[in-house]
Length: 88
Image 1 (cartoon, helix red, strand yellow):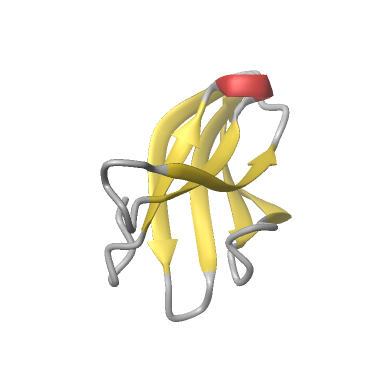
Image 2 (tube, one colour):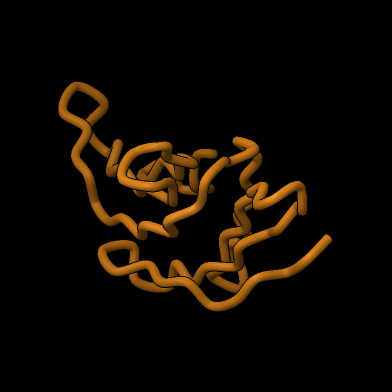
């Protein structure tokens, strides 16, 4: 998902155990990693929702057959962090 100001790209990442990567795309010819939070999840669904008004990201994951939504704080794009699980 791209931020409303089109400067950041939020990606559900499968690297390092899965999580969220925030990429600065203000210069599309030289994108840079802005921030990352690793969640150590087994499988990601690839679904991601960004709530910029409340500075939250929601990532869909699957653990032992249970769908879990990970809620993250993205207030500081250089240091996003995990808040809680939402079991769906």
